[in-house]
Each structure stands twice: as structure tokens, then as C-alpha cells.
Image (tube, rainbow over all chains, first blue to last red; front, side, top):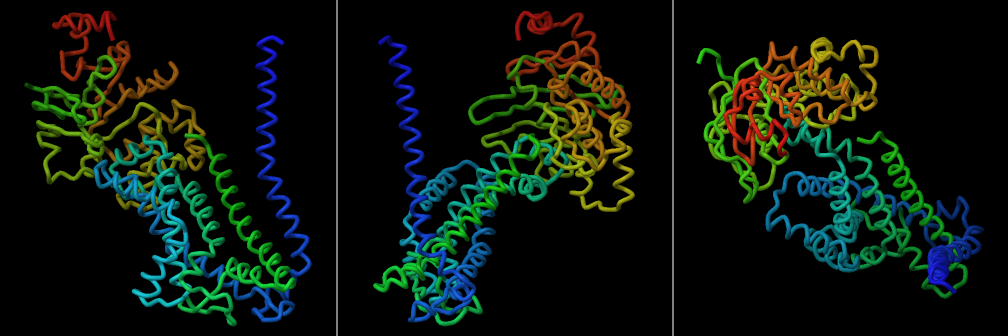
Length: 285
Length: 253
């Protein structure tokens, strides 16, 4: 065998190995999805979606859970988007390079790596106890906002960085203030990228159970929350609760709830992919 | 001195961090004339140009000593408002940089940020500015189409129109034709020739033929210093400094 033959074999071997690695993840996901769909799809009907939880599996529904998830999603977005985008804009456009800005940057990167349950403990102390919000939707939304803030800040900065400096120069040279430049040029040009990051971070927040359990979100809430100060549950907690029960029927319920939760996260991710696609299709600078 | 001077620099030094970019420059630029800044890359001519509308202000570590005068007033004094200054001193950049908006919105941007919203004023400004920039005939039927669909040369003339729309008295041009093809370059040069009746123009260029064609005065920069400044004809035919002569005869740079 010549050397070049050997190199070709190595090349082929690595290709095969790479394909296997790629499919490994996908196969596991597919097996999981199929399993869940077989178990849960039959249980999903209008009643399941619109019923309150119950001790009897066949009567239990996920109304409170998905309404809670929706509440959390909207409240978290309302809190985290303005804070995260404003912080990102400040760090990228206003902050001069200094020891303080370096310090902020490193810490934001660190925050992104903090386990979500730690945020739960923080939320429990600060929002539930100190601020007296109780085990409410608002406390949950604040907690999840902390969780997604670093991601929103980082993606906002990346999106702003991608706007060419020549646009900034052009606006400033025409007498625009920094704020006018940001508001009229930079943010519109980077909105697609920012929204992509925001949505991906929200879809992560929607799947979180741990921090919400810590702050005291309940598994059994027999009413639909009507204000941000009501107690609540969310889909991941409902699922967690059901899978921990011994009865087979509840496992089926859990599978059905997982399908609904996956549907919500896939929908959010789909919107993010679409936004990114539209962004890329825009005329290049 | 019979002519009046629009812009001047007195003992100007500038730094980027530790890098001494502008070294003790004194110069006075005549009103309603074209002055060309020439010199090899990195000689500080663009940095110097950007001092006249304070575009270096936002760069980290930038520092300035000395005075830059516009109509005998120091534009780096504390009470000078940068946005007011930039209404007076327009700028055109090396690469055409239209906003990703319509042609119309590009031209009126400077007015919009001043809070002008009367439709008639905006429309008149668009027509006047585009005519001044010799672009009106080419775009009058597609004012509400995206500016990014224009050719590079058209985009650059749009950027000139955009700068003229806020009625400055000075126009700074940083290698305005270096990214354009020869035909577009000629159009820009013709335009500069037209505009100098109304505006004080300062143009940075790498292209010595261009400096010879469009400018009344030429200043030669080398490593942050102003080597020579005189009438363009004089500078190109009988330079006083040996370094100027070496540069214009192509021996370096």
C-alpha cells in the first residue's frame, strides 16, 4: 500500500466516523421522540388541553400548566428583553475599554455558566422573600430573566458588532447623536440577530423546571393564574410531577405534556431560524 | 493674506494611545477651494482630516493638543456642540456607506434627526441635493427604492447628496473615489469641481493624478508631519522639499 492510499483510507475512515457521530445524537433524539409520540399522542385531545389538573389521571389536564408557561414566557420576555438589550447596547456602544468594562464582560460570561438551580436559590431569597413577591408568576419571571439575561446581552452585542462601522460613521457625520445613531440605524440593522438570540434564550427558559421548583412553583395548582401575582405551575414542573408517580396513566399524561412542551419550544426555535434566514437574505452591506 | 481661511490648525498633535499620529501641524485652508491631502498610507492624512469634524472623538485612547479652527473658532472648545459642528462640516467616506433604506430616506436622514418632518421641505431638499450631486436624473423615478440597489458610483454620489442635504459649508472627503471604477471616479471629480464654487472641500487621496486634477492646493504628509503645503501646480512642478519630490516622482510610498 502506498502512502497516498493510506492517506485516502484515513480520510474515508474519518468521514465514516464523523457521520456516525452526527447520527448518534440524531438517532437518540429520534428514538426519544418516537417513544414519546407513541405513548402520548393518543392522550392529547381538547379535554386534555383545557382541563384542570386532577388526582385521577384520566381526568387530569394541562390547562394550568400551559397557561402558566405562557404567562412566564411573556413576563420573562417583558423583563429580560429591555434589560438585556439595553445592557448589550451600553457595553458595545458606550462603555470605553477600561478595567470596569473588562470586569463586567468576564462576569457576564461567568453568569451564563451558572447552573440554573443557583438562580432559583437567588430568586427565592431576593424576589420571593426580600421583595415579598411570594411564590408568584412575577417572582418566577424575574428569576428566569436573570437566567436568560447573560445570553441576551451576549447575542445583542454580537448582533450590534455585525453592523458595519461605516453605518455608524455615516450617521454621526450627519450630526446624529449617539443615541439617534443607535435607535435609527444600529438597532434596526441588528434587530434580526437580537431577536434570534432572545427567542432562543426564551425557549431555554420555557424548558426550565429546577429554578422554578426552588422558588416554590407548585405542581398542583387547581386554578388558572389571572394576574402576575398568582401562584402558578408550568409544563416542565407538571411533567416532573407526573413522571414521579407510580401509576402508568400518569406516565402517559407526562408523555402528552412533553409533546405540548416540545411543540412550544420547536415553534420558538422555528421562529428564530426563520428570523436568521431572513436576516441572511437581506442585501449585504 | 487677501483670501479668507475657512479651516486652520494651530500646533496640532494627536495620539492614539501611545502612537503619535499627528505631529505639530500648522495649516490654513482657503475658503471655497479644494485642498488635497496626499501622502503614503499611514501618514496621518485621514486622521488629520477627521479632526475637522471630530470623528476621532469616539476612538478609545485618542488625544489631541492644539487648536482646530473653523471660521476662527476652536471646534474643540468645551462649549462646542459636536452635532452642530457636523451640520457645518459634512463628510464623505472612502467606501460608499448608504443606509439600508430608500434613496429618499438616505438624503433626508440629516434633516430627520434635526426633527424636520414637513413633507414639502423634505421633498425639495431631496431634489436639490440629488441635483447638486448629479444623481437626480438617474434616480428620480426610484426615490423610494432601496439605496443598496444602486451601483457603487451612484451610492457614493448619494452619500455626497446626503452630506449636502444639511447645507454644510465644508465638505471633507476621505478617498471618495478609491473604491470606484474609472468612469465613476471621473463623475465624482467633475462633481468636486462643480461644488467648490459653494463649498470648502478637503479631499484625501492616494491618487496623485487626482490631486492634480481636482485641487487648488495640495498638502503632503509623511509620518504624521506636514511636509509641504502650497498651490497644487507649484507642489507638483517645483516641490521645495526633497521628500515631496521623492514621493511625487514615485520613489517611495
